[in-house]
Amino acid sequence: MTIWTNLWDLFFPRPCVICGKPLLQMENFVCLHCLSNLPLTNLHLQKDNEIEKNFWGKMPIERATSYLYYSKGGDVRNLLYELKYYGNKEIGRFLGHCMANSISLSGFFDGIDFIVPIPLHPKREKERGYNQSEWLAKGIADITHFPIHKEVLIRSSYSTTQTHKTRIERFESMRDMFKCIHPEVLKDKHILLVDDVLTTGATLVAASDAMAGVGGLRISVLTLALAGYD
Ligand SMILES: [Zn+2]
Image (cartoon, rainbow, N blue to C red; front, side):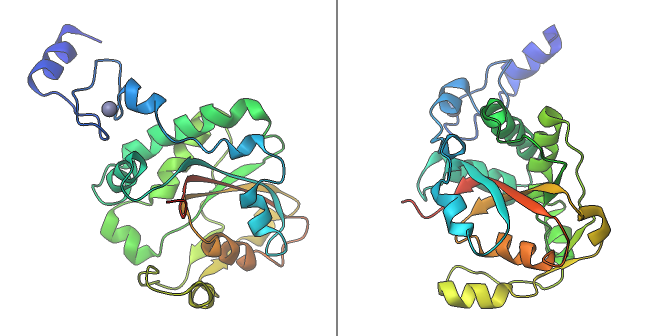
């Protein structure tokens, strides 16, 4: 850091995206106080955790976890809004670093060959300017050094809001949502699917369904936040 960045911070303080207080020079996006108070799930430490059980019988799941608990009025909402609606793709990379650092010593990443971020429909990606899951994946890749293969899956249908649909309606609307266009890349591989929010798991199951014909494919799942706990 130079005197110029000090001066810049003095005149144009960067706020913490959670509490709004000015960040210190060495802080990025979230102040250390808010960072240390994030609602970690720590589910990666539990074998056969509730997320993994939710996928049993629906996809060939190896391991699954979410980094944080999401609650509507909570701090994690601010992070997600920043990432998805306020155009802050770089916070995705930062959160990817946080996620990977938090779980890397647990063995969660053992044996993974590469990362596949859940794609957005091209129309939505164009509207947003980026795919937030890809930016989380970039952050995870910075720490784990896994390659990212975003070309293997494409999102073929454009989903409207899922909020008011029942669980069954959501699963129905997810059918054929994805297409696997490079199955040869996936054969006998262990991939890490990365998404922003895990709610029912329908999106991830739909992605897995698209890859169902690939021999020897194993799937682990890592999402930023786990919803449905408030
Ligand atoms: Zn803060």
